[in-house]
Length: 338
Image 1 (cartoon, helix red, strand yellow):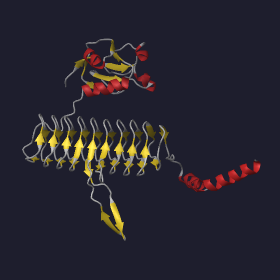
Image 2 (cartoon, helix red, strand yellow):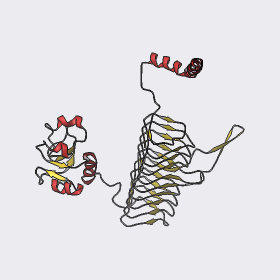
Image 3 (tube, helix red, strand yellow):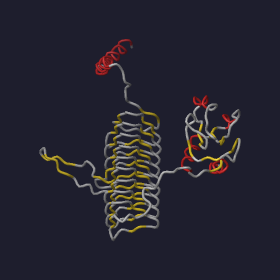
């Protein structure tokens, strides 16, 4: 495992050092669990008590926390961001693929850039374009006329349908399916008539898509995921959705069709967003929230009720159904007072 001096790491962050700048660091760790050769961080004051007992060789901390700290530290304004960047710098995650495996099936019309790696039993379809440095893991399928930008990684068993475009520096985790058919049907006297989904999927740069997440292709126009979006595991993005830049969506959230979500939104896990609505920039939606209408103003939105004793929940459910009657009674009383 390769190690770096504290000076090298501090220079990488453009940060200051307190203590021994020659100490060697090879990995990251938590305050409580780190040992020699590891670096940790203090970003939450409730963990300050762990500073004295931590065996980490160095700690990332703010200037204020560093004032009375006697150990080795990298000093910067945002230790958590610094920790993320150091974790990237020290990352030992292997490549999704490191060569073109003999068992890979690559169409003659496919165009491969420099340093492309394709794992065992992967299939690259007709007219596919793979940019420089693309890694395609074992068992992946990249469908006809799809384009994958430079340095994008597909982990094992990712399925990319036809006419899907991914930008540069994306990470697509195992089991993700991009470009599957949207849920489009017409009903004729009780029989479902399938509507061919002829749009594609357009994904920007630096997008990360979690394991077993699905992004459906557009019915006519494209489904769009813009730069810097992060989607957790088991997220459903339906046809013709548009997800704005740098929005984050946590696991098991379902977004129905033709939804537009703005930039810099944060959507918690297990949310359900109804179709054909829009959410403006800068919205934070708490976990398990059901969104059934437009959101036009930035802010925090919630709708889930907390867990409670079942008997109390049943009583409150009955009371919830009585709210309109109660409102009308209060309104009548107010009118009488006036």
